[in-house]
Structure formats: C-alpha cells, structure tokens
Length: 568
Image (cartoon, rainbow, N blue to C red):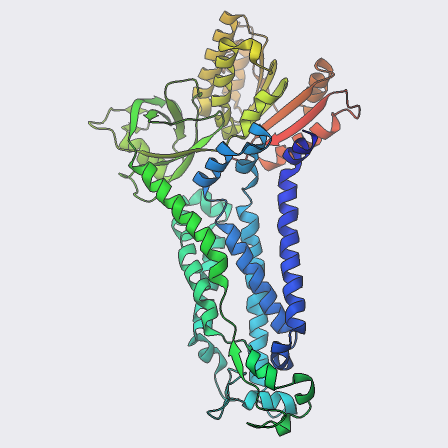
C-alpha cells in the first residue's frame, strides 16, 4: 500500500521524469552510435557531427510522435482505467489525470524537429562546400563518386553551381520536410490559449492537420538523402586502410570503390501502433455517435446557462467526470467537452452550458434559448455523446475530511460531487468513510452561476431535513461587486438568509485568507488525512499546494493535507 500511495501522489512527476529520461537516453545512444558506426565513416568525413545531431533528433522525434496520440485516445484510456486492478480506484483514476501530458510531448516534438531541421541545413551547407575547390582531398574524392555507372553517390549535391534549396525541395525528403515544418508551426500556434479561447473552431480544424503531418513524416525517410556504406562494400573496402589511399580506389584491388545506399525508413514502425489505436478510438467514437441520446429536459437558467438532461443506454458515470457533446445540426465534426453536473445516483445525466462562443450560442438558438427568452422548438436537435471521461474528484470519498475549492467556472465539476455526497449520506452513511466536507467557492459574479447557488440551497435544505447540516460546511467568497450591490447588501445584512445566494450561510466579500482557513481546519482535525481538491486558475493552485505543505504535520500521527488539482 505504501508503494501505491507513493505512486499515486507522485505519478505526474514520475511520468515526466521517465519521459525525459527516455528522450535523453535515445538521443545520447543514437548520437554515439552514429559517431562510431563504420558504415557512416565516410558520411562523417563530409558532414562531421551534424550527422549524429540530425539522426539522434530524428529518433527522438519518432518517439514523441508515437506518444502524442496516446493521451487523446480517451475511450481506450477509459477502458483501461475501468479494468485495471492496481491499487483499485485511486490508481485507475491516475490514468485520466496523468496522461494529460499531451502539451509536454508536443514541446518535445517541436524541440527535436527544430534540432533536426537546423542539423540538416548545416548538412546541406557542408554537402555544397564539399564540391568547392577548397574541399580537402578525401572530401573531394567522396563528393565526386557517382559520376560513372559502377559508382553510387554519397553527396546528393552533384555540382557546385547546383541551387541547393531548389534541388532539396524537389526531393521527397525536402518537400515532406517543408510540409512537416509548416504543419507543426500551424498546429502549435493555433493551440495557444488565446486562439483556443477566441476561436475554438480554428484550433479544432487546424489541429487536424496532424493527419498530413503524420503522413509526411512516414514518407519523409523514403528520400534516403543521408547515405552510408553498404554492408557488402564494408567487407571488401577496409575503411581503416583505404581512407588514406583514396587516390588508389578502383573497381578491383585492395581498395575498391566504396558503395553507398540510404538507410531504410523506420518512422512508420513508430507510428503504426499509435495510429492503429487512434483509428480504434475514432471507430468507438463513431459507434457512440450512432447511439441514441434522449433529451428528457431542457432548462434555461439566468445568465445565459442552458441545462440539458439526457438519457443514454448503458451510460455510467462518476462524480467530476466530463463528456464530449456534438450537435450535427451545428457542426458534423466538432466535439466539445462539458463537465457532468448530475450525480451517478440520478436516472439521467446533465450538463450546464454557458453561452461563451459561436458554437454554444448556436446551441442555444437550436434549443430555443436566446437571450432571456426561451421558446420550445418544434423538434429538439439531435445530440451525440462520447464519454464519460476523467474521475479525479472521486478521490474525495477516500479521505475522512475533504476540502473542495472552486474558483469561477471551476465550480462546475463540484455540482455532481456535492449531489453524490448527499445521496451517499442518505443511502448508506455508515459505509461512508467521508465524515466532513469543507466547500469554498470564489467567484467574481455570483449571478453568472445562479444555477449552482440554487443547487447549494437545495442541498442545504435537504441536509437540514436529514439532520446532517454539520456534514457540509460551505464558504462563498464574492470578489466583485459595484456600489449599488454594496448598498443593497448592507441594507439586508440582518436578514436570516444571504441576500446574494439565499443561503443561511452568509457570503464573504473579498478573497479568503488561506492561512487562517487551513489553520482552522488543521486545528479541528488534528490527526486526520485531509484531501484538498481544487479546480481553477494556476496561480491559486500554487498557493493551495504551498498551504498543504505548510500545514501538514511532520508527525506521522498528525494532520496531513494531500493536494489534488483538477485540470479544467
């Protein structure tokens, strides 16, 4: 169990370190091999160490391209998570949480592609220079090979006056290399947070250029521009002796003319497995697209929030999971992620969608919700559902005390969680390890999430009726208000319920003092393992992680805070 705990707590760091270690090993091992391999001795005479730089970065590029598709195979990862037996629930959920290093691998691809391109530019320059009059004897002799029928060339630049750029672009390696570079630039630039938020459709469609990227990468090596001495030639041509007797090279004799050929391309071997898995993923998604989704209820909440309650055969979820939603009437290709806001115990699953872009606004119109007016359309548009995926927040139930912290829109995953907590309290409170939940919600505009405030009000009422009012302690912090709101709040402060949320618990104004909050929780639970779950911006995440370390006791029998961050 101790090993499982260590892995669960540090799996993200372990994966990153393993990835860096494999990249470093592949690069160094390949670099050293090309620096010493006899078949590339004459190639190194012309190119020097740039040969090893190009080939080592190429292998690392292949390795990272193999990994880049794995995190997006969500259906297959979900299947593994559901069937893996190691350390049961917490370990399985790490698959969803820790295989999200897609961006990190993309950076690895970009770095290795840059090194590979720069190395080849140096190679091209050295190939061109070796045809000049300044080239030394052996280099010049190697560059002249291939002029007669019984010879094979080593230098692809055949004359000094050859336009190397134009000549390169007419080759398979050159043209595909250009396509690979342009595709990679487009994919990376369109993946920036600014473009994703301002034009998700641009990011979505541009990202699918990866198909062109992979096809070009697979055939890039067919050009075989970088060549080495053939095995048959190595048996007849002793490099150690003949390199000093290049003037005596001839068809027969102790030093026959060396023969060269390109290395067989191997990139497709790296890509075959991931591409097959990705194809299976697409097939599963198409199959799920064909499954019927019944929309049982459509609710138009204030502040442009649309709630869809749906049913689907064999749909099983866990608190905090998300799904991909598609509406063919809007776009036959786009799938958008939304957090599930229903509990597993309910006979439906739901999402709350806020109008925040072209696609969501079009969805509102399709369901008759436009502005503050809701008109039931003659027929509801068809939607397709893929998922659910992810389950990090389910770890809340593995701690005796849990602290749930949400900032802004990060409150959405906690809707399902809080509902599930209430159901578990009502159904089997004696079997529930969780005994206390602290919920913090920091938002700038509470009106934007009135649907969530209504959920809290409902839970508060139900908890009181069941005699479990002490189980859930919630703290709402409002960080944005105007003068009129402040006057209204001051006038109604003495009422029994909060003027903003309608809850018995009063809303706090400003930001929480996390030192005081953690100190009070640690004092109330002196010998407990406390899980801290956060969904929100990175800056606050760093602060909370620091608080968890600061207020965790050095005594093994003392209080310990365990931080969990939900990407959103």
